[in-house]
Image (cartoon, rainbow, N blue to C red):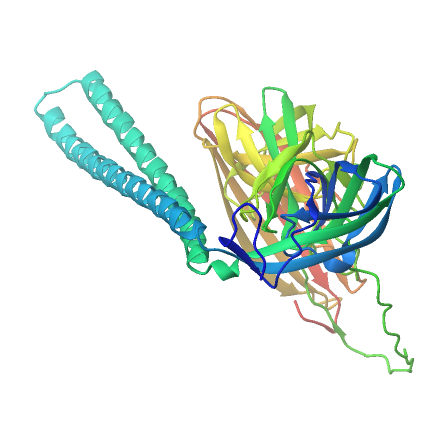
Length: 533
């Protein structure tokens, strides 16, 4: 058992470490993050003496992979040996003081949590009282009107005041709830640290021991690289829609719990999969044999997801048919190495840190679109061009408008120069309702079975302004000659566009305070002997 020179008999290591080595400080200057690990590089100038230099780098991540350790030196020296050693660190004199500080911090968090809970309860109670006053006031309005009492302006001012108070109280209640959740998370981390102090032998110390031979005394640049698990990143984007432009920010959400903090380090985010492709696939025999042709034809309908992240030119989307869906980051098949805009600090606490990578602005065209089969609302859609130098990787998108945060969505891979679309939530003035009527009959002459689908779409604009709207429906697309799908033009409203995927689109203007009805009729014809559907 050995002890440190500064705190003799106060800190011990099991097993013993060689503390006669010269301690050096190599800060983290660069971290390359992969999907499930990270490569850390430390580098600094080190003063050497002539001959053998026995150095030690303390505070290394305990989870560092020994086989990944690589040491390089620039200057008049060469590396003789390098290794990683670990030991349990027990600080006998540090425990009481550190435990007391954590306990005080935990008490402070509990007091803040209790205060937030009381404020939330008060806000919720006051909001309930205001809502009760509104209901009672609304019940008295017809009675006052019957007796000729009251005035519409007075009622309007009263209800507006009560509504504003209720909204403010409910907003305060939500803020206090979020504060309580944050404080509870911080308290859980403090409890974890306190439990580690109760078991000081659970603190693992990791040291890199390096032997260098120098021809003469001088200063060299010493570099150290190693790979650590418990670190990953995923793309996260923010899109802010302005009047006629879109500001798009690509960020990286970083998590790391490696046991070492990355302070003012340059981060590089890579989509390379270093653990894939090392084992060739197993080959099996593919036997061909003749099979009697089936006389009857059985058909079935299937849903096909059309991947269309980009508009016009293709790019991105999911894997090709028959391909393998790999977990992680979709990079479009090309390995990307994205560099953070500036050095950042990522603590080893397991919490997400958001690091900006790049930002671009583009002219955006906004419109209202409706897909009645999926949702009874009209959604704001913006179409813009990716004007950045790096691709937008598939991931979640935080949506912002001039009024603030409006929700989240997801985007697929978008290449530079490609047009793509984003949805920014529903329009509160437009209502959509859809009904379908199906009839079936068999032709007496050719014996074909025909199913007629009549789709009715009812649109309402509750606002005073006109709305320019795109309404999309879909009809089946047949892949065999035994099934035919025909759009009945004379029973379909207007002259909608029909693409190769069976998407029928109307472009129209819905006047303010008006209603409109659209009709779509198509026929599915099945040859004699066709079963299914």
